[in-house]
Length: 427
Image (cartoon, rainbow, N blue to C red; front, top):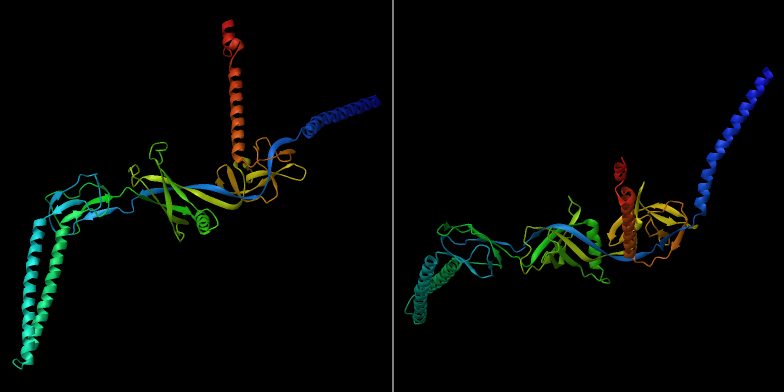
C-alpha cells in the first residue's frame, strides 16, 4: 500500500514538474518570438546628417519701452503775466514756432531805456575823448599840468567803460524781450498747457511739454551673451554686419504702422551688475506718429548671425530622462540616445552647445517612432530644415485627422445612426 502511495506521489511530482517546464517554455516562447520579429523588421528609414559646423542667421527680440529722446519741457525764462497762447493742445509744432507771450510791452520799454542809456554813455565818451585830445595838445605846449592831462585820460576811460556797460544792459534787455516770446526749441506734439492765461509766471515756471514723435528712440537690454556675439559681429569687418532693427507693438500686429524699421545705433560698453545685461539703443522713423512714446514694444534685430556652430533641425531634439536629447548612429547604424546642451534657436535650426562632435551622424528626421537600439536605414538629408518641419507637421495633421475619423465612426451605429439608438428603437 505504501509503495502504491509513494508511486502515486512520484507520479504527481513528475506531472507537476512537467507542467511547470511546459508553462515556462510557453512564457519564453512569445518573448523569443517578439525579439525575433524585432530583428526581422526592416530598418526604420529616416533622414540622417553628418554633423558639421556652419554659420546661421538668427533673429532675437527684446521687450522695451518707447521713449522720445528729444522731449523738452517748456519753461518761462522771464517774469510777468502770461498774456497769449498761440497753439492748441495736441498740435504738431515746428521748431521756432511762437507758443506763449509774456508781457512784451514791459520788456520793450526796458529795451528802449537801455538804448537811451547807451546813447547817453556814447555821448559822454565822445566828449571825454575830445577833452583828452585837447589836454594832450596843451600838455605839449606846457599850458596844463601833467595831473590835469592824466585826469582827462581817466575820464575818457571811465566814459568808455560806461559805454560797454550800457551795451551789456541793452543786450540783456533784448534777451528778456526775446524770452517774452516763448518759442518751440524742437518740433513735435505739444501737451496741455500747465498755466492758464492771465496768471503771473516766474523764471523756471513749467508751461508745457513738446514730445517729438519722429524719430523715436528705443532703449533695450540684451543678455550679456547676445551682446558679446553682437559686438564680435560688428567688430569683424570680414562679415556683413548690416543689423536692421524692427519694432513691433504687441496687440497691433497686422495693422498699418504697427511695425517700424530702424537701425541699431548704440551698444553699451559694460554689463549691468544687477541684471547681467548690456544696454542697446535703436532709432525708428515714425512720420505718421502712429506709435507713441510710453508704449511697450518688442525690438527684433535682423542680420544677427552665429558663426561656426553645430546645429540640427529643431524637430530632431526631444526631451529625455536626462534632458534634451538627439539620436546618433553607431557603426552598425543603430540609434543611440545622446544628451545635449541647447543654445539659441535659429529659425528651424537648434544650435547645440555641447554633446555632439563634428563627423557624427545624427538623426535629423522626426524621431517620434525611434527608440534606442533600433536599426536605422539612413536617408540623405538635403540640408533644408524647413522641409523636415513641414513634412512632420503634415504627418501629424494626417494622424489627427485619421483619429478624428475613427472616433466619429466609433460613435456611429449601424446605418450611420449613433451607437445605442438602434437598440432603443428595438426595445
